[in-house]
Length: 124
Image (cartoon, rainbow, N blue to C red):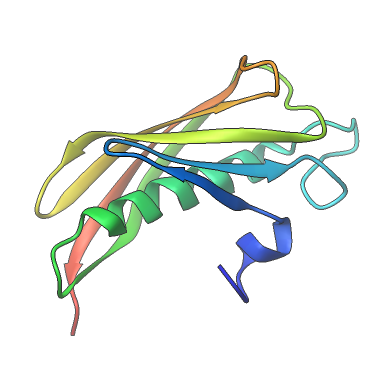
């Protein structure tokens, strides 16, 4: 993630499993809104990054992915020091993939739930 928004925000991939990808995002001056909680857009950045990276890990050689659609529901404030997101597949196809991403706080309570659809494209 060197040289990307992810690096700038302090995002880290923490675990790769057989059916999930997990990462953290700090809740600090880079990612919080004026009330000291995570900005909803920062949650979406975490969700899209995890889902896109997970999609890329599932691609056949010679293919890549781009985000096609994302939606998110913010259910509880994400507070410092960080939140954790976990992406799990709902559909892995040859042309599209759909991911469920759950973001939790340090007490493992749901902060945000998102669904990401990626398009699978052939490299030029």
